[in-house]
Length: 131
Image 1 (cartoon, rainbow, N blue to C red):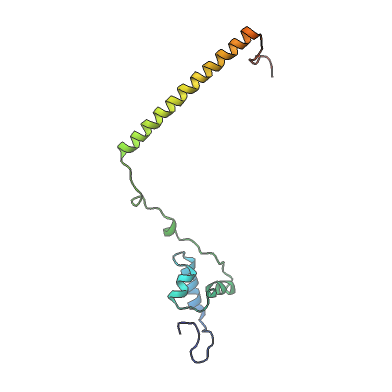
Image 2 (image 1 turned 45 degrees about the horizontal axis):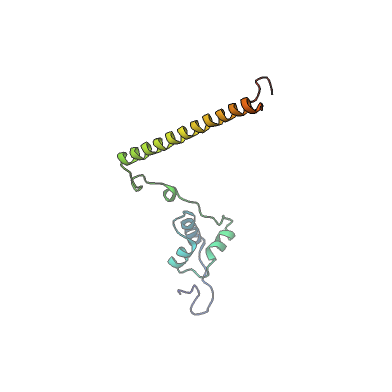
């Protein structure tokens, strides 16, 4: 009977509606795949559960349970506060260096514009009354 057929006559086994609904319910809970349920209950055919769902007008996609998607904070790796604060201090130092570089770059551009306007008489800066 492992192949899903009656041994005597070679016909496919028939399952009652309650059994089909139970198997579909287990699949829709999201804890089992169709293949796992097929092996667990020695069901015939790889698509019998999908066919049952189609026959009963149920969607073929499992509904994920809250337990599957829940994140347990205790299982997540915890970093020490000292490690986190050291990382934050390093990030602050890096950002301060970037800010200083940008300020120097801005000052250099400003001096370059002043020099071009005074020596070459090129109007580069936007006038206050223009749109």
